[in-house]
Amino acid sequence: MTLTSTPAPSVKEPRSGADRASRRPAFLAGIGGQNISLIGALIVVLVLFGLLNDNYLSLSNMQVIAEAATITGLLAIVQTVVIICGGLDISVGSQVGVASVVSAMVFTTTGSGAFLGMAAAVGVGVLVGALNGLVIVYGRVNPTIATLAGLAAYKGLAQLLSDGRAQGYVLNDDMFIFLGRGRIAGLPVMVWILIVVAVTVHLLLKYTDIGRNLYAIGGNDTAARLAGISINKYLICVYTLIGVVAAVAGILLTARTGSGQPVSGSEGLELKAITAAALGGAALKGGKGGIGGTLLAVALLGCLENGLTVQGINTFWQNVAQGALLVIAVVIQQRRSGERAVGLPH
Image (cartoon, rainbow, N blue to C red):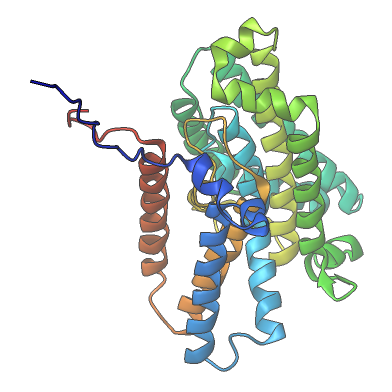
């Protein structure tokens, strides 16, 4: 009797993310799947609210959206950087409040012009940002816990300095007026500031050793340490950078509202920044993310928030929407990473 071997049935292996990306058209692969999804969602939001309200897509309303999203965009950019290197900063909104109050109070009490108030705000931003980094690095405190404490502490500091009220009036100064209401080539100055910060950070992350080291720290901090990267120095510098950018955002908040705001205008910014970074593709475990996706997410959140407001929908639902989007972003990240669900077998 002759024995014949039966060939084993072929098993089609699942395609990896890289395989799928290589099969996309070149221009789509360059954009990235995450960004394509965000662009699609943004188009849907624009079309939907444009059909519901004739003025939604007007140039004036688009400028309103851009101005309103600037402060969130600045914070989302630096939030993306800290998430890339494996950290998190929940205190950014409170830092904005402190900087806003300081910029207005120093300006009004000294009578020395806008620059002194702005310099004082940036100085405070450096101090609180560096303090966060030092507590995390040398206190060996988890970044979430350390900055959660900062969220409460800096909010309390802003309220103590201002007695819980808006402080000063800055719209009698040309510099504050220029920052809050000026235009360059038809675009608000605030938007230009966002563009400059975004381009600078993008170039830093993509084309410098500093950026590569930040991704390495977030991807595998043990390997990064063995490679000679000074992780402590990088973390302190990143949190200090957050303080500086939060101070700039606080100055812009002061210029936009006309006075120092201890809470109004800054409360909830941390949630928006984290949501935008996560939606933009920044992996909350670190080592992955980019500024392009973050800016698309900021635009999506800004257009959605404005559309809900224009339609007269209760602002409380905007918080519900932000929370839902953050959960959706994290779920998508977990599914793409292939990590099993908590409590379920492999």
